Length: 251
Length: 318
Ligand SMILES: Nc1ncnc2c1ncn2[C@@H]1O[C@H](COP(=O)(O)OP(=O)(O)OP(=O)(O)O)[C@@H](O)[C@H]1O
Ligand SMILES: [Mg+2]
Image (cartoon, rainbow over all chains, first blue to last red; front, side, top):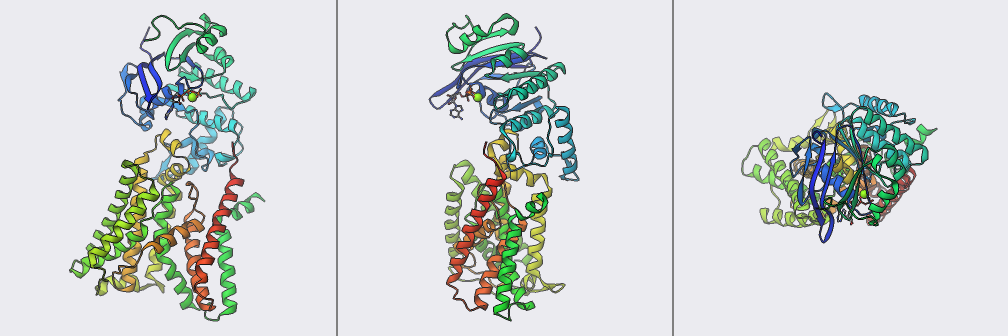
């Protein structure tokens, strides 16, 4: 097979005495929707934050298209590496409006000043493309419901148009209809050739949209399966530990 | 009428009504109030607070806090004065004085960021240290005489408006522009509104912090220099803790939220004018000045409580 777009090898991370990840591995290939599942506290979000540079791994490397990322890096360099992300806590600023939140980290300038008109137009365009019904992009994010916020956070990541997207529980706060909507967005991104790493507790969503499922348990990768080669029962068993991990999956 | 409600939801609009009400009441009681010279006096007295308030407001909107600003104010005026007394030309003296103040801001930033001391403690500490340094620097004596050229900077008028007021307007407009029209200002609001989000979205958080602490110290020092020119001497007791508290009070009354993210320079201007107006009104109406602190304290509490209410209406809990 070709070089993975994203390759995590032997990532280990502890917070004080709490070990969050122990030689965690993950390889996501181009055009693939790669689901990462596991119980609460398994270390999924920690893995995402290590990729983005919010946390530094104690050990291990993060490779993008075969080249390792510098060990110490800030989320500011994420775009340069072709990655965009939706954090589990969404990382939205409540006192700023939707348009500003969508552009945060790369505000459009004109003669050095903020180009508010372009920012609003961009926001309307990206939300329109994603078929999100928002009456006014100058509404403060603090006024939105949890689900609306989640869509805004996803829209921000999509807007950056990077080859690799990391989604940390993108459907956690969403109703049935909105979840289906996010599913459509994921399918569309995949059709556009993007690679997506998606953390989710929603196994129905995972089985509907993922090409590959990796299971994380107590900080270790216990299995990685192609979706068509596995069943929900098996994945649930791997998550809870009822099914023993693959030989060699645990380093 | 959502537009109208939006206007009234702004702190500076409610403040404007308070200012007009106090002004009207004072004018009824004292014929000396509505004279050009008295109104000018009100503005001149608010200038130092406002200039200091500009940098402080940016910092607080960005989620920081600076208790050392009263001491930085003293340092700016004193150091500039001392250099001039040692026959350094006044433009250079001002420049060095201001650079020293920026350095204080950078030191505040470094203590907070690298020694992990909470802002309130770090800047309270540097307040005391600076106060000591300025006293030692001058043996506790005021520094004078200052060159005439320097004094006219503050004492002259421009188109009939005192230079200090013009200076405050320039600083205010600049700060407003940076906060409302520059990407920097938006990033500052993002930083104060949700620091984790700012980090996660790749904002240069450390640079924003150092710029904010530097700016707060710079406007503090600039106000101090201006004050020295105004009174014609570098005064050891120019700033101090009351100065720090007055500035922070003006900023909070002006609707800047201690929780970060929210606030405007127009509000700070209203806050500064209101504080100076209250002083003036009490003197003119011969109400004992001891009542001053009671009134200001009550207004501060009301303003912050109002702000909280407003925030609750503005942002729903998830
Ligand atoms: N900043 C931190 N400081 C200390 N401990 C942390 C920190 N972040 C995560 N942890 C710990 O690391 C472990 C893994 O947390 P993580 O957030 O990665 O789990 P998760 O798989 O994303 O869980 P969830 O499904 O609940 O989101 C937990 O035990 C957590 O308490
Ligand atoms: Mg998580």
